[in-house]
Image (cartoon, rainbow, N blue to C red; front, top):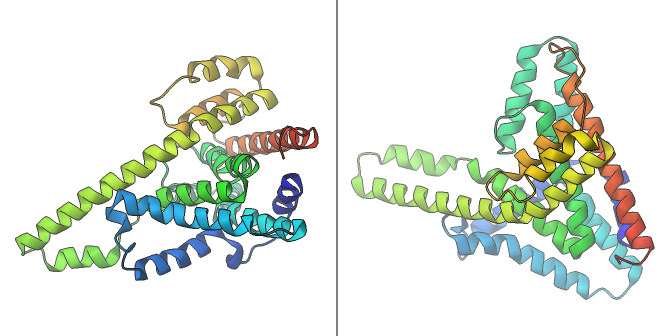
Length: 302
């Protein structure tokens, strides 16, 4: 049933453009509930509470699905969860807007689209095509892997963890205004500094967790990029980063992806790299879908 869910979710995700199906919309509603809960409201300043915010929905999803005895109902429920976890409409819209601006020669607009997307996703400075490679992994391939290996709860866990990290750089406007209004009061300033330090520790803890969660999948996906691209050129880069425990997973994947594709294009053409890397990412996605299908049909995976 995992294969059926994957095929339906991949087909449906592209056409369900309503915000009701977007993970970000449901996440914001979840955050609204969390902030109204006294026990979890301070999750941004506590590592334990931050993990609780991630694991409570995951555990709840696991036990709820475990209560479903009907195979058809389980298929429907797991597929709906996967559809929500898949993709990101804002990323697709940003890619389309970038290409439209590039074809019109509006380079300033292209730069704005790139910076806006990177800021929204809380990722470092990189090319637009490189950004699309990383987000394709994060929103599609990684979710597929966690769904197949750990079920709907696994896909939900990964998507929650990535979203918490993406939102870690957002400023709390109310707190910022409060800090400005009380700047003359030393005690309140000290409390603000303590809160900032606690929040930084929470963010670093979540980032470390995501780093180790991504460590092995990124190397598997990077191998897939090699397989569908220039294997001999990318292999040295893949081997060089195989046992790298300091380099961010995004840089490992992007380094291999870039070596897996030839960029025999005009340097002034800002559409060439994104288009080539997106095509490469799509081929990699199809490769993993095919491998998963074979493993499921042969009984290796259920």
